[in-house]
Image (cartoon, rainbow, N blue to C red):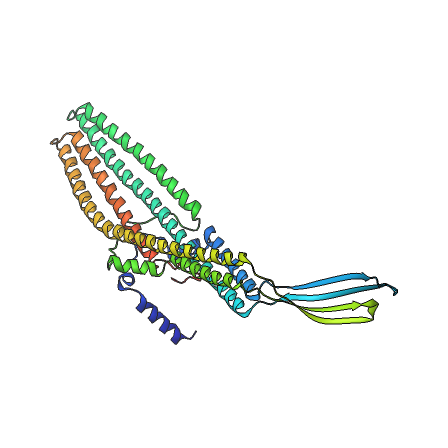
Length: 418
């Protein structure tokens, strides 16, 4: 392909992409794209789908050349003639079925449709693997974020305990305050250990399922609001969904197969070339044979069964389209609503953190009881955890929306977006 043609193709593809999808920003806490593509290419389900594609190509070649083969028929007999010598006779015939031209064209189209379906299944396998990757990646990010927040909480509680110990030694605070500080710190350390265990489990599962990926790390990446509207994203998702395209290929293949089976009601003839040696070699016969099977009711029943199977697949395709449309709508709502939810929770967490800081200062000045200061600190932590959870949920929803619309990573065979 020349550079000019490549440029024209790129411009055509860009024009075909809705503005909502083209202008979408990627979440900043995603793994590197080149590492992701390598991980998806090495995924067992993707490799299995690629193997099935090779099998589909072999099946296409089998259908193209046809199933009829040459056959060799041989016979020998003893002729006993009255008042004449006995004769040993033999004959040999070379036979082969002849596929009718329309059947050959249908077989070729069925094989080609099977290859296209298998190739779409590769894209669907990559898509499903990418969905899993997003899920495990963000689970690992949640684990790391939770551990970080609990460690910050422990640092604050340790500082609060030191202040309380100093005040207890000076007689400015009761020993009960020291016990409360110790209890709060012990509880925070216990929660932190549980968070570390969850984070380690999430990291281990990510590493086991996608060993090519680095450790899940990411700063406080703000979720980018997806532009456009719900209808545009649903249209984009359905336009490039490999599962739906594979279902369409399967329906077309089934319809072609039904036509092909219906053509079997007209059987293929079997043409042969026969040579016979008779009367001990005194007579030699060379001839052509033609055999035509007589069709029965079984062929008509086969045609009806394959047509019903094609109708079944067509209904399944409609159900797949409806399900994928619903999933796309849910993805859009989660992405758009997740950004707003994170914004509000982040504002609440900031306010709760300021309140906790003021409560801590008030306690240092003896204007607030320790229990109230610890409660404020606990509420601030819960608000921070909720805001961080909402941030990662929004980023994952946006990444999923972009993934399903083929605007995140190339999912097609050969590294193309479609």
